[in-house]
Length: 354
Ligand code: SAH
Image (cartoon, rainbow, N blue to C red; front, side, top):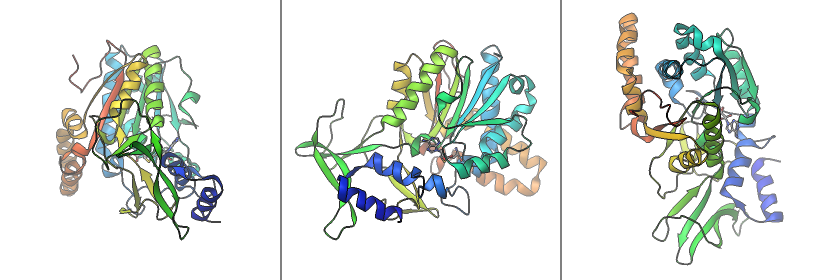
């Protein structure tokens, strides 16, 4: 039975689903989930991400990690970890750029945390011949603690499940997915619930809360507070607390109604950076965040684009379009944020932290 039909029967028998439950089933159902069966990353798929826009993205991040590692006294060994590596292209570009810093690569063991079997196979193919041999794991905890953690996650936190709450005259009510009179999936509301720390909001406002995002903030913060290291989290999301419905389904590079085709589209919410970073700080780490545009410009992406264009004049126009796409405020430059979790007293390069 198709996932949509199974969801309907689950709701008929067990009652409405939370948005987080719906996201988890649509993305990871073993038989029909989007990532389990048909993850479509890239121009011919459903969505495109920064590493697929340009090699400069992963290269600059690689050099940033190597510089951060040198600042920390070049610890050996170190744990290099990527959460949700997708196509593997970010890690491939990062490792290539780090060939100029052999000490960093020699000290590293590489862990890829990936839930999707088809994407693991794609990562294996992309990273064949890379300077480090990856190991795969399903959970961050599987990459052993006890060495400084150098972690990168691009567009990973946005596909973790979130719940939504709607402000009504009776207070906040959870947004849930049930069935309408003709048996189709439809959004509805649960009973009023008391929410701690909810902001003031007008009736109709939607608040998103993702315990799963915050749990990663906490786990990464705890590791880095204890073992040292740097974690770079890049995603679309907000830097200030706020409301707004950001749940989105993308299929073939188009947005489509979220309940249309469970399992056939990528489903995301914006990352709630304030909650993720607060969880990291509560776990003993420090944190800082900026926009993707400011971060990449600060790392010298314009000089890198110019150098590549000198070496490949035939690609100058393409490189300039890639640069715009990554940093321009109307493109990815401001919507996307870059957050870093670090050990108090050992700040990262590139964020202007003294
Ligand atoms: N970082 C890549 C891919 C982003 S797509 C890029 O920038 O191109 C999201 C990635 O996270 C995919 O690899 C997906 O399979 C993985 N993923 C999603 N949920 C996950 C989970 N709960 N645990 C591990 N990996 C997950």
